[in-house]
Amino acid sequence: MKIEFYKYEGTGNDFIIIDNRDKKLKADNHALWKKLCDRHFGIGADGLMLIQKKKGYDFEMVYFNADGNESTMCGNGGRCITHLAKKLGIVKGKTAGFIAIDGKHEANFVGKDTVKLKMTDVKSINDQKSFYTLNTGSPHYVTFVKNVMKLPVKIDGRTIRNREPFKKEGINVNFVEVISGKTPIQRTYERGVEDETLSCGTGTVATALVLAKNGLSTDKYHCDIQTMGGMLRVWFIQQKESFKNIWLEGPATFVFKGSYKI
Image 1 (spheres, helix red, strand yellow):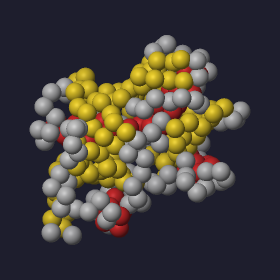
Image 2: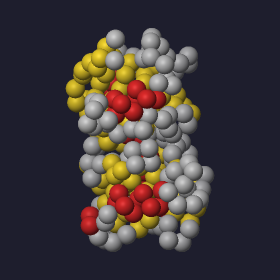
Image 3: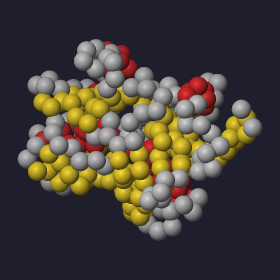
């Protein structure tokens, strides 16, 4: 049996996407997803997504980390799967509506390869003095650092991700450097990948909201973040300690189409 797949990337965060509207593939085939994501013995990706049918929506997004396990929301993945849905004719206009593990999402095309994705509201940010934790569809840890480009992200991120109280469920760890007059720089260690990725969409949202909470955002209504794979913009409306109308805007790039024999 051959599986047709599409390879996408959003600011360097790369994905395998499979059109599974016919349900020929079982979503619980975790060993296969892990194999496909392997960069040495498979196709290679930070994660894998299935496009599936869902009544009342254009499609359903089912997301798996590189370890093969189903995971929480992926912002960069959400933009990429929307782009593919348009390419496949599932989405006809400039707006899409889909369902993911954290609920319904709206996505708008603001350019040929630029997608703006609505994220879940954030009711609160937990200030732990030296770091912040919040859930933007996925759990995140945000901390401010100096010389972020010299930081051993894989080592420090793994240490934080595997310590209590995060060890059991895991947490994505974002290291952020803020320099006056310059765009904030973010580097992220992702659980499930268990390594640094070039970008993390929900992590960028988390960082933007923490910056806004501290009066450090680019603008009252948006914040630009420089990731290792490119620039992302986060839009939001702040209401004291909570945030609503959150949108993640950035590129969704088709890389290639292929087939894999199983």
